[in-house]
Length: 161
Image (cartoon, rainbow, N blue to C red; front, top):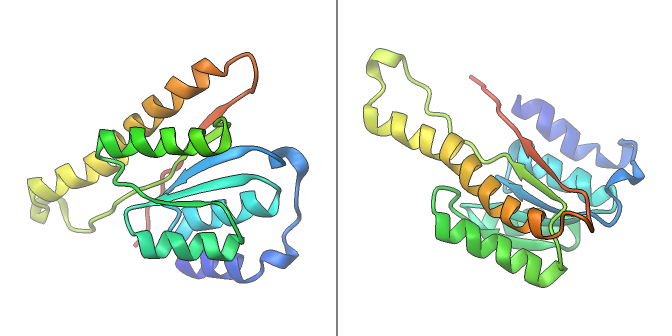
């Protein structure tokens, strides 16, 4: 999977662009690497303003640098206050939120009988609670702007070995 993502990222200049994202304000979680980074870069290529959020601030700053703009935020999607503050900061800076991409995810590969309950709870917290908290924060804003701007929430799930 990572080879495909790296190939996608390295060949960005050959990817067809679309005007559907032009002038949209998009919040992408897990934007420091992998699928989230590819989404952030593609949205930017298509004219969107992207808020790139990740638990790793250095990696998300690199994403924003490659996009030549946007906002890099360190966000732990399992922390409701951090999520709410990040969405509020984004709206304060850009005036609205058109797209929330709930992409942040964690995978701890282990046979089930060897997987600790603590690690299971970490995966569930990031993958499910994170999507819930990001959706909740986004919807609070999206309902306010309902008649002015159509909005979307996108959920990403992936598994790799």
